[in-house]
Length: 168
Image 1 (cartoon, rainbow, N blue to C red):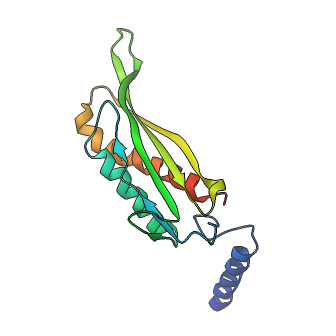
Image 2 (cartoon, helix red, strand yellow; image 1 turned 30 degrees about the vertical axis):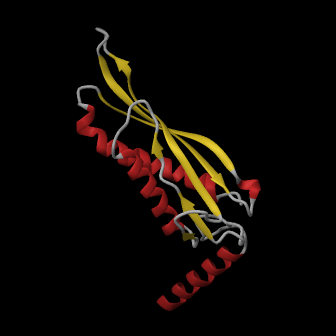
């Protein structure tokens, strides 16, 4: 009896993945002409610089393309070329108590990303992506910075990846 349920599940997944309603490919349908991607190092040109931000963001973007697409990751001149820079990194108070003491601070990261493809020019873009995370003002930024950067770069990578690979 168990094999009937297993067979039905496998057959259902096969039909769903081929009907156009549901796709098992998390990166959408990237044009078949695109075989490779290059992800440049995202320089940090923000007035305030966190040393680990550039390498963290750049590596997470490369890892995302490797794990979520069938594209070959190449050093440069890929069929799809992703580049960009970190243009904003700031901390500002967002809420206060009655005596005007901040209770929450907000870390904001802004990234400008550019996708270029000579083969499929209609999907080229240049866009700014911003993420922020609030943290307790009683905490020193240096004590929470690594965790905040890790969480925020995950979200930035997902946004940039989605913009780069979906709607093909």
